[in-house]
Image (cartoon, rainbow, N blue to C red; front, side, top):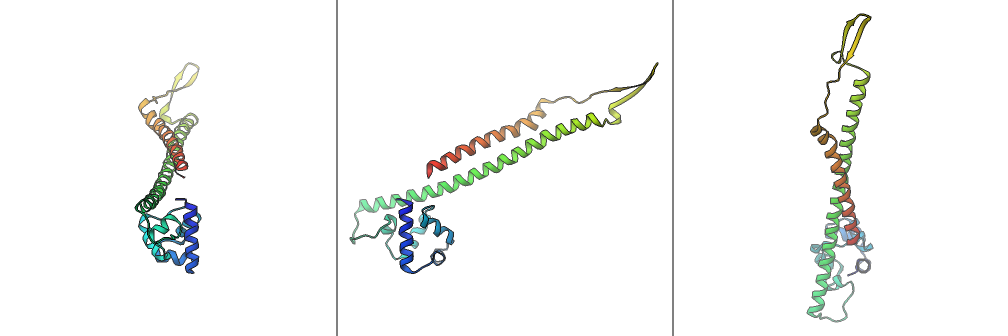
Amino acid sequence: MDNEKFGAFIARLRKEKGLTQKELADQLNVTDKAVSKWETGKGFPDVKLLEPLAQALGVSLVELMQGKRQEADTLTVAEADAAVSQAMGQSEKAITGRYLRLFRWFLIVADALSLLWLFTTFFSSVWAELVKGIYLSPAAASIIGGADGPTAILTATATLNPLETFFALGVPLLLVLVCTVLAIKVRRLEKKLK
């Protein structure tokens, strides 16, 4: 079933009934934006809404699913099966698209948070080292007396812990890479689904 053909059929039936998108939406307990998406072919109603939609538009469920009025009063079993399977396929496709879009946005948010984590960790450690280099704490400097006057001895006590470095920089970097790759793959799946 073609979404645009289905949408044009709904729009034509709605106008024949003298209903606005808002009035039809109110009858089905959905938003007028949902009806607009159906009519423009950008969406498909949930399977649970097909029967109430058919009743609201004054057509049979099979006519609604086929996107055209039936000339004959009877329908073969094969035609009915084909219409039902098309409607189920369209509904599953729409639901899958919504979940993929939701998952992609989750990945984008996780990616942004990982980037924030990475930058704050990296820049806070760089900033801390910079501040240590400029403003020495009294414990880091010792002054001893010599033959030619006082001498300052600076000592470095900080050691690099590989495990801390991995968790501070490696984990967020790994999360950024994984979330970015997954978001790209999910977007490609969304495009294939359309």
